[in-house]
Image (cartoon, rainbow, N blue to C red; front, side):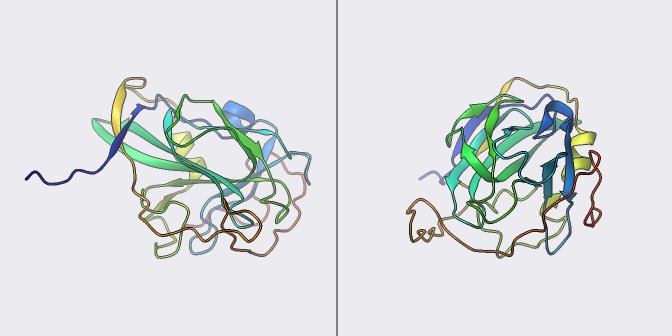
Length: 225
């Protein structure tokens, strides 16, 4: 009997990576928080007008990819989308997941093929938990999914998002269809939200209200490996 194989889907090789807001370069947005190992595993992006001025603004997929998760997770993640990307680095094919959290609306579905710059959703507040912003991650580890517990909260599992994007703006080999691993998030059950059976709450403290700053400035702390 043949050994079982891991399930696969299909996606296009990325031809480059852009920023998830103010496409393609993050225009009129700034980072209110950067990556901090052990604590904050991505970047928070806000409109330069501050406050909730960016509520409902579009969020875009950073590269060609396949939606591997799209679901309302309650007041922790809010509406959460995870997209899987294949890309060439030299002659080696690599895979990353991009994460778009706290969304107001999800505009894609699991197993949907996306092209670089397609809209995945809109900026939200995780159902009123935070001031409006996009929480954005890029992950090396394809097993994390919606549950970050049990994984090292450092650069063994995550990339610094902005440096990664800047180093991969234009890539060779983009556009052709390739297989991509799916079903990598395990089988742990999602606990239903008390008022929304499609969600799973895990409340966390509210963030400080951001103030307007120039694009790419981090006003709470710098990216820290």
